Image (cartoon, rainbow, N blue to C red; front, side, top):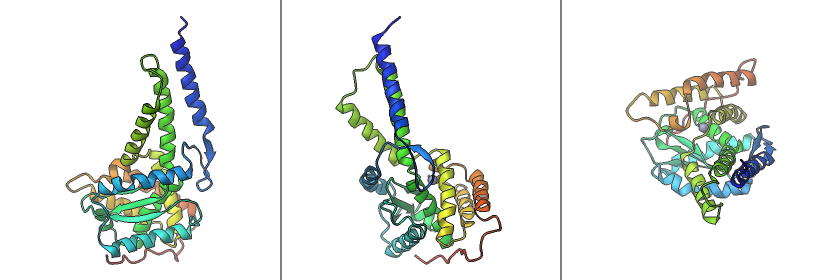
Amino acid sequence: MRSPRLLIAVLMAVVALVSYYAARQENPITGKTQSIALTRDQEIVLGLQSMPAMAAQFGGLDPNEAAQRYVTAVGVQLVTRSGLGDSGYEFRFGVLADRRTVNAFALPGGPIFITRALLDRLEDDAQLAGILGHEIGHVVGRHAAERIAKDQLFQGLVGAVGVATVDGPGGGQQAAALAQMVAQLVQLKYGRDDELESDRLGVRFVSEAGYDPRALIRVMEILESASGGGGQPEFFSTHPDPGNRRELIQQAIKERFPDGVPSHLTLGRRRGT
Ligand SMILES: [Zn+2]
């Protein structure tokens, strides 16, 4: 049976697939080929736009200025020593006042936050560098933009399926799609592969900044113990299974330093904040 609607649906599916694969490009920092729907400038704008709502979910910025300076200093050290200062991303670092939710996250384009609850559990600079390095990995890995591209593909395919019953896409639908994307940014659920890539990038950035990357293993232990008490830390909903990740971090360190971690890489002393 020939159906014009079926034909339209097939065409829509083809358009969705073609535009997804046409957007494929190599990431110069990670070397990975990926499909990206947004330009870097769009990522930056989207990140800055969603920043206030995101921060508000975790009590807003922590009023402790020493803590803000500390986190910013370690973050800037990571960015500059890893040669990311001229990468075009607008990195900025902040502490959010939430003392109960153990979490850290990155928004597209550069904003990176850690909650007070997580910061207070850290024992040295290298652990903070480990967390910030992992989040920098999400930014330069362009994981949010990649998710959006995948969602657009998904929506294109869903749209193709739904074309039999729904009228063609209009401006209102596009606006709804954009709103949905921003909502997803706020949830920031990256895939497992994204997390593992960020862990590997974290090992790299932490080492380049002069810190001992083994601190990342300790970070995983701290996160695991944080899950033992009452209240599930949110870090786990966005950062899966620290146990397995510990082994992969070990492996990444071994690959980077086959002869052992050089002695000049330090843990640093946790500054009082
Ligand atoms: Zn992550």
